[in-house]
Length: 155
Image (cartoon, rainbow, N blue to C red; front, side):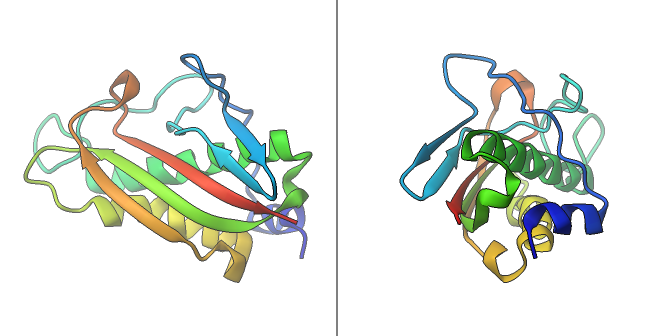
């Protein structure tokens, strides 16, 4: 099944490509791969939340951060499709790297980045199974709670 058909079946409409916030491009094709830059969970030009992930007052709950990681992955699909010549040129996912801005005692980074991995699996099926890293960091650009980069394979 074509990726565009699967997105329609899932009721997912890809967002517009998020413009870079610094000196880089959102995605780049090299051979039969598409590398995305780190994607923030931007929605309509802004972050839905800022701050560190953790438990407690003033922190971003892990469940919310998981949803933001999903948004990051959809932004990555949009960026990759834009440089690849369309979403149906994307054949699958090779690698996901997820960054979670979290308090030192938070150890749930893999669960947060599951938000990205799960939606990529829904979209690409078996071809969406990927290698992955989920890393806790002290701060991310624009004080985003999560950032995700993806390497896609081309058809």
